[in-house]
Length: 465
Image 1 (cartoon, rainbow, N blue to C red):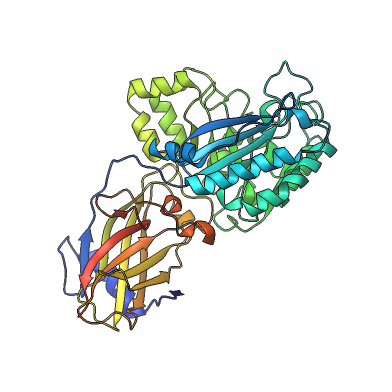
Image 2: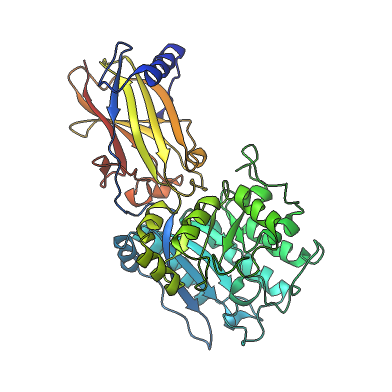
């Protein structure tokens, strides 16, 4: 059971006064106790961010690939990876419906993600070679495949980090294509791709995004100008514009990332958009632009959340040699660090309890999928537990900023004087089937506060008076 919180004016004014006047003492005359937290440089897996590992499933020649196992995914977590790419090449079905065996494999992989504690970037395509024709299926076949996949995408949407648009062209990258207009320019040219994009948006749960390969693809499909970006006001409003995200599979490979950007307007579009929608992908070749200085700067500028750990090996090796690979591993996506906390100094059973936190995001991005924030109160025995829903949205804890979070609640009646209690911050998955799994909860980058058994972050230990 969860209960709401209060935001009493006196309590919050007290917190604000403490935040401005307390010079670092453990407590002050305002009645609030100050706690300073120690940041950590440890690399660890966190949901929906970081380096990913790619897995291909190829339907060619009549065979059915082997599904992923939960143990394989747990092995990725031991390598500090919580994300995998599941890429399905549907060669055998380029002119016919997907088989039951194909759909069963997709479902078994989704089940393995749940059990193995990972999420997936998902893509479907028909070809992985420019020398292999045809490059893709006709539009009616593609739309039929999406319709077949829709029940699975809806049912397992919680373990999908983001769906890359795919289906069109070699590798599903919307370039070399037989059926969707090679090198489209106008909105009319893009109309067949827009129908695929609409079908994908409909096939996914309404809170999940579809990533397209270039800024032009989103602008032409959605009828946008470079100025029509998602904004603070329109982010996550459920519109198609707010749900179409980005992926760049030739990151840092050339001046324009091998045609990803046509000009500066394209770059500015993604700089702004990526604050609110997912951005990720892979490098594709070594270039003069892929050193540590340019790489880290671009990841900051374009708010990168995920990156292929296996490709391009030359770029990964360069980052390792130049010394920034560890920083990139830590900073991909969000990285939340508690700086200070302020709490009621002498909490009383049945009384009001005030909480104020200063939290810094040291990552390149903020979360892009919905995620609740909760405070949890427990006693030392573990038999008493109360969850408080917070009105905080971690998607708005933007990169490079320190965020002030304030709340208050009444200590529930089951907690009595003399109880030794712990207050926790809990950032679980939004899906109730994943919420209780620590693998899908966000860990803060601080020393000594993470509880791996519960997925909670320890804020304060205290005794009720």
